[in-house]
Image (tube, rainbow, N blue to C red; front, side, top):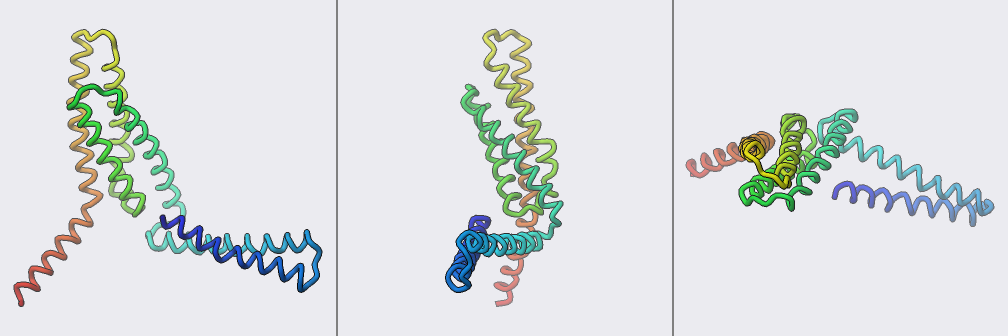
Length: 205
């Protein structure tokens, strides 16, 4: 949403400047059509990208990140989004109700962590275990499980593998929940401090 607003701001400033530059060049300075049009385009493009540079600089400052760190985090977020989409794509292939619930919880935790880090990229560093290990494991195990489920023959070995995978997915869900709590730890600490302050204020009164 913020990126959209920033784009609208850039457009709202650069478009009038470019238009005024073109009108000034062609009607007041009597410059021919094509050079005046080129001046108008330049008059819009230059402020557009100048404002964009300042907006990005301000954004990085508010996040407390360098440009390299921000781009690194954004790259990992894009990869994570693809993996979450792969998880969502497996929902219709699971027939077991318990396994479906596990997958739904897995997707819910993953999307929540993704959303939090997207809004506050600095939290990426408290959720690296999710991005570099748990999410990959979730995708691999879910794809393995759906592959085993769709096998026409269910011999003892496949049934044992299915049960082992279900158990591992259950344990992984708990790990994802822990990842989410870790990402939210700062918010919880802040909430506890505010509650303590509120209690102290009430007690004093």
